[in-house]
Amino acid sequence: MLDPAQSSANPRRTLAGTTPQPPEADPTPLPEGLSRSAPEERLYSIRVAEDPGAPCAACGKQETGAGPVGYMDDEPICDLCLLERSTDLGLLLAKAAVARAYSGTVGTTGEQQEALHELGVFARIYHRVCSWPARIIRIPGFTARNDTTH
Image (tube, rainbow, N blue to C red; front, side):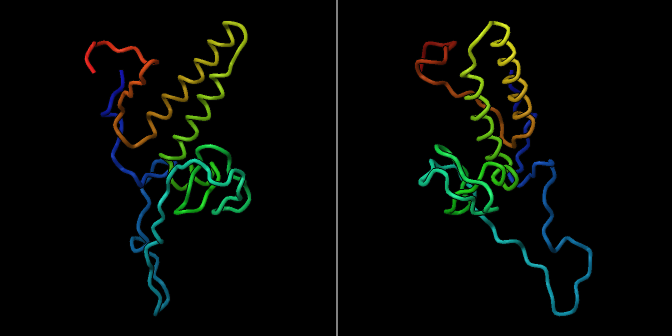
């Protein structure tokens, strides 16, 4: 059973689980005439890639993928940069990638059971790290319902 109480509601939590402190919270004194300013707020999102394989706007090293990819404002970014900058969205893409990798598993029953176990482990990690309450999404034609009403 999913436990929504296990999730916290802090959208600014980092991958390490800490909340970044604003620059003005740093006790280190600055030279006279300088002040700390808050970093520019960026908008992170997941969209279907307009230009699959574009260079990452954050690191410039990796290429973005095809299908759903991360965006920083209006620029595509690689999966790792999204994970580092917006943990919740990065994990969401990672979860989709893991599910797709294991959904294609064919072979012996043992191999399929191992893949299912690994997917379950990742799902538990994902649940512990994400910062919103769990909810069940019913997919028509695929998800069995316990009740008969819509």
